Image 1 (cartoon, helix red, strand yellow):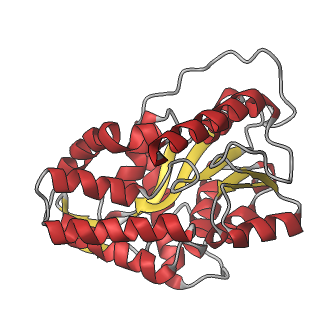
Image 2 (cartoon, rainbow, N blue to C red; image 1 turned 180 degrees about the vertical axis):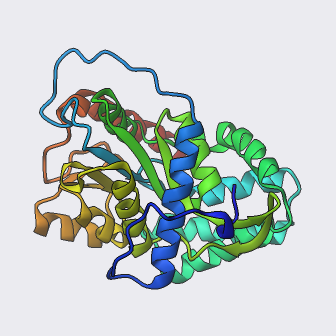
Length: 315
């Protein structure tokens, strides 16, 4: 991955935005990294769709979908699962693993992203990868996905993403997780690419610093805005999916916002705004109906399957 100093961001229009300079920098860097990774990725095979759904609209080249990762696409935090894999490979000590475990427990119990908690996770991750080669972490990340992440993908959310792909639309992950980890997950799910936190590297080695700040909250919205500009997308045609009230800026950008496994603040906001909701944690349909037609059957079955699997693990 190129270092922050090597990014060519001339394609992004410069204008005033309601965000901090560091948020803008993080968002633009994530968008540039996502575009480069998607250009290198193999094309996704097209699948036949028996009928044209009302939404997503087949053939709408101005539309795309943006999915948050933690607790939206995947149960728990991707960084925690990545940390488990690194511990197994002796990247750090037991006390560090205990810290990662506590961060994951907090994340699951709170059901939302606290900025201070996210900063702790960020600092833990940066201290671990500093001095390691990007290529090394990418290779290990592939193994860790198979070991800890693949079985934690929500089938219902995966069905929603597939509906957009079947409609010929691009689908992007948007996450505070490292862009390398997010790119691996996106590729393994057959998605277009990923917008993630960009860690600085020099000569292919991590420096332990970030380009801008973590892709969280307003920075996610900046990344989506920058990518939409570069890709020629009409945000009013696009969809976004998230579980967290911290992503309201991103959800508010698009014409089709969805609250998936929402925390209490997002659930309340979504109901007030008339946004669509879906909860796969219990397999029940949320109060506000209306998921994409093409994903209806698959999402309902996926949600039930996810609920059964989760219940078994709790026993």
